Length: 270
Image (cartoon, rainbow, N blue to C red; front, side, top):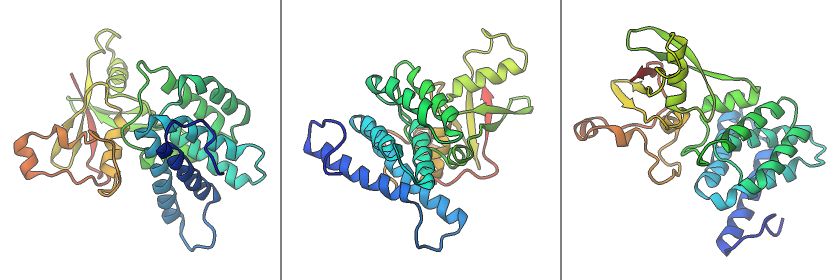
């Protein structure tokens, strides 16, 4: 490809579009001629896909270009493995940023008509969820490891959360779940009426630290921050956890941005 698929207003956008095209080709081509094992391959794929997705998160003007390039790679492609990897990447992008209002209906139509295997339902759901948010928002971090596993298998996700009285339950979550929406569902499961179930949120415990989430925080963004390697580029202002430590805690407990341990859990709070 010598030029972007969509018009661009600057040379920088043109250069970034062509660079993303090469990354998408590299991802869809898959592993050839290497000795990576299953876990190593998944880790490599996730890192490459997350970098592509990060570009869409921080550069709104590139989002439609990314979606159009992925669609272009699936159109009349006779390689089933490449097509499957394209739809995996599509599901990852739809987990993190929405298309423009102009592209939305065309992308929804394309997904509905041409999505590979089980990706039709998962991509439709993610696309409609992100589009129906007011105002339209993007995630701060790329998808988590759990999201990539769920996308590969086209299954739903759940996280364990604990109530202040010690009771614990699993709550269904998706890429666009907020702390407020999940806590509201969990409080209704305890018998509260819809009005009383509003206004709650979640706290996440990690080792000896407790982090309070704002109601509109995307839950999986907080998990993704812990998983993100220190050298990975992040959006400005994207440090959820470090910004919520008190000054005294920050001097003694620098957040490590490591994968959540078995001790990580969520607690429902008013």
